[in-house]
Length: 209
Length: 126
Image 1 (cartoon, rainbow over the protein chains, first blue to last red):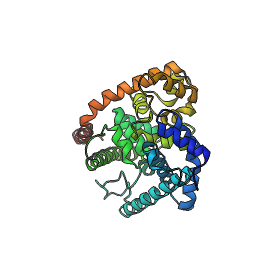
Image 2: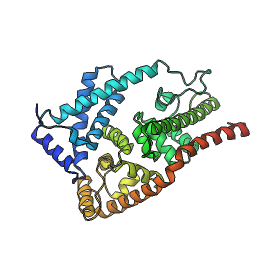
Image 3: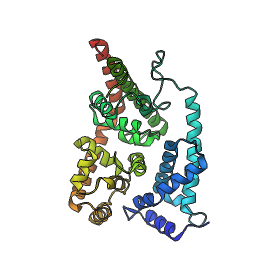
């Protein structure tokens, strides 16, 4: 099915690169329906965060390279839903590989493993630390604004390396190297935060509020 | 952006990695100025709920289109045109400055982690 008149109009505006609000309006119109489309295909037990992130990546990729979409072949919503679902499947496969190596924050044998990808910080502290207290710890632990932005991305479960690379100013150089740098910083920041939270939990006997 | 649009908020966070959108420079500006969403919205004289939409706007084109683009964005989010123009200019300046300073940032963050370890080992109270 071809693009609807509205989809075609959005596409032309985004292609033209002369309307700064075109993409935001497209996101307003399509983000929630796409999350529903992909969520439905992914199944009722799917990771909703992963679905949202996949839809987000598909939209942002389209905004970046709208010329890849052919409105004569498919509707924009269908095209984006397919792209997002493909991303979702890839991300889910990666998550499943990582989960096999998942470890507990409170495992005494757990020392220096890479946990930034295998376990979100939000999951680590859930049920143990109140949000306000957590941000107090974060502000004390990370006086640098860029570090706090990295923490914010981690706390929101953002998996894509691009926002991290952007915060770190890693726009040049080989992709492999950038990914490595991002992972290095994520791991170290996660370790510092985990260590500090663990210290607080130990100090207060299990909860921070 | 921790407000009442969870869906677009997440998209706005992801968009921080896209250099042609406003999400990145706005986040940097907020961090450097120490502004939360409420304060940013007050500065722009707009509703806090439109901030994710602002983050998803494309950067205004340079002159002679800058003014026209700013006016379009301001109308879209119902913000003060002059405040928006000043804020975007400031955010982009900070971003340019920051990207120069960021060249050695990953190494710096690694060093900070190391220092933290050293402090803990030295102080023995952590």
